[in-house]
Length: 316
Length: 316
Image (tube, chains in turn purple, red):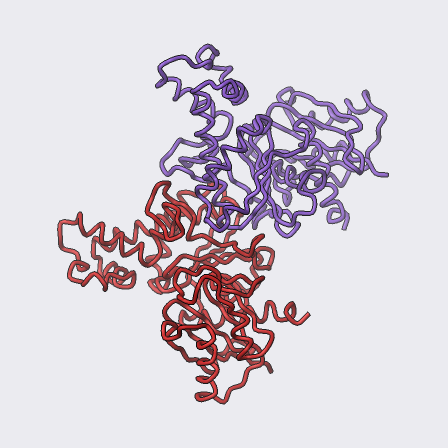
């Protein structure tokens, strides 16, 4: 039996785990991404951590990270990582772990994780959207990950949902991410608090604590401003996802990432708005679900799924 | 050598032609779609027309039409055809022409025509947008037509480009088609004429002559209102197409259909607006072209291309 090492590099945290063929997590650990000034030092730290902490072995390594190009093996222009514009992800890890490391964009890893270990199973067409610092999209068409001509498919976060809207880090105006990414959600909350007549639980929070998680928690206690914020975010997400369905007739969409843990309030509200923008004869066919993969392990499983998907290709 | 009969059913006109393996049009004719109260009578009329007018033979039949489902073989809920909600296209033509008729959605036919007979040739990923009464989209991914889970992919015309915008026949508000379809373009012209201070060539036209073609003709003579209308239409088209590129990283887009004949003014203006909405690192990679296929024959060639694409599948 083969075991796999899956690594999930995020802007804040890097999680890794040794996973069996069936997706069982045999060992997992994590380090703080910001502690490492180079990608090489991160690779070495993970290797050392595993040597010190577990006897489980692994035969191959897969890594999910933001803005990864599979063709170059590099992280390219990732706004939330500080290792430079072009980071040789595959090369650096192969120096430490040996040849054959598989690298993949994190949203695509999420889609493959859903295919190999999640609910999507045998579905031929589905999408996974990742909600976190940014907003990502991975799509499987005819059983195969859709990567696009330049390996850049899935820029859901940069779909312009309001012409002349908020300024985005990418340089455009009105990108979905500026409303439905973590900072965008916090900004909407700040704006609504300014115009609120008081009585919101959010007002007692220091500005740095105005996170999507706190806002969702307050919404579950019926905090009116929080409910407004979430309705606005879900409206924008529903609107953006309607493009995906109208253009490509994708029935099954899974939601994953930090705020997906907020569960049904998110799913129901997105679905309501999504249906109002989708062509009527596609409306009844939509299935929007929260990913059943455990959030903390999902990134690791996604990286392992990429090994399963691509290791033959890499060998040949 | 095989010859093919390609039939292109439109709301107004039905064109058909006998085409050689290499795409040479050996014979072509057309009838007025509205003259036929049933799809059976249309099929019989085409058969008789060919028997009376040409000695060219053909071995197989392909038909492109709006709102065709390949899986059912029917035209389903086509707003511009009067033969009922569900029209048994394949069945009716097979009664007249024999088994093995291939049917396909007209925008998908356009994409296959571009692949087999047009400029797209060996491109693995590209889209064709059809501009006419409605706005259609056919997309080839990894060399294969993308049909979607329900065979309904390509509803570019029903992408909502303005939340709470113009009312669409589909029941939603703000669909691209209500701005960039033929009636939408005419409506925009009417609206702009109401607020214009005079001096537009369009004002001398009777309302029924306010067609996209007349508006493009006037724009080429620098008519200010016509130029404003076209800029608005191209802005909306560019905005809608940016979703396609941001979501699926499709580099090559071809424009076809009636107003595509207006050529470069259309292409340049769409491209300008499109680039303003596309993620910056995808911006330089976009190639937007007017289809090089002869407009009157493109629908016929598309139907023939569908035979080439699917006849093996139909036989097996």
